[in-house]
Structure formats: C-alpha cells, structure tokens
Length: 67
Image (cartoon, rainbow, N blue to C red; front, side, top):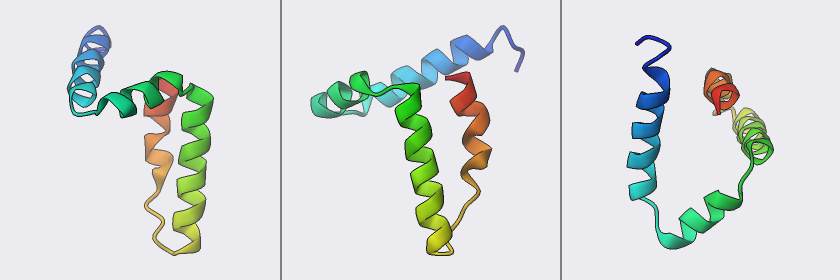
C-alpha cells in the first residue's frame, strides 16, 4: 500500500471500528487522547509481562505513532 493510500485505508478502518461501538463507548473514545492510548498500551504490556503473557505490543508502536 502506498503512502497516499494509507490515510484512506485508515479512515475506512476507523469507520468500521466506530460502527461496532455502543454510544457510551463512542463518548469514551471521544475523550481519549494519544497520551491516554500510549499509557494504556504501556499498562497492558506491563500486565502481560508480569503474567508472562507478553505479546510484544511494541508491534503496535507504528500505529500509535501514526495516530
């Protein structure tokens, strides 16, 4: 996928994701910031590492950086 197609593909994926959310979830996400997302990913990584269920969420870093 070329760089010029990335925003369109992301927009389509985001709209598909949003259609699956409840009204309450949409309100929650509207208040979330990129900083909130980064902290949530870090918390999940720490929790999984402690349970030895770590799944290398660093793979999500490019997505978070893109957002």
